[in-house]
Length: 142
Image (cartoon, rainbow, N blue to C red; front, side, top):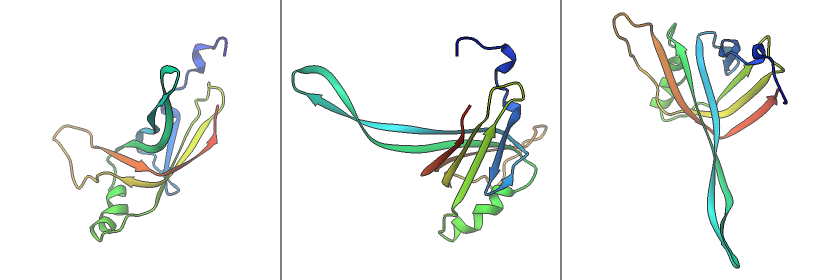
């Protein structure tokens, strides 16, 4: 892109998140990323070390205003019984002044922790959940 209008910069206010198809209107932030692992490759007649991709890992985080116990209800009893629920989180982001939409789905989500309870007098309730995932689909790109 050779130039852009300032109004085309995307504002996070226009993001959406669904957990297993349920719209999480209380979401305030969402991040999903893939980390690439490499091994060094030494080559003859070349002093530069090459890199060979050896794996990828997905991780992310979702932050929610505390309005109910959605995540706790979804996973607490299952993990206590030694079961991991198969969760899909989908997110879209499309600013009304931006160009296009970005939409992804992360699959086989495994939360790294669940918050049983966490509050402090005078503070607005918020929950943040880090997670790992083992698959993803890119459904739309701007």
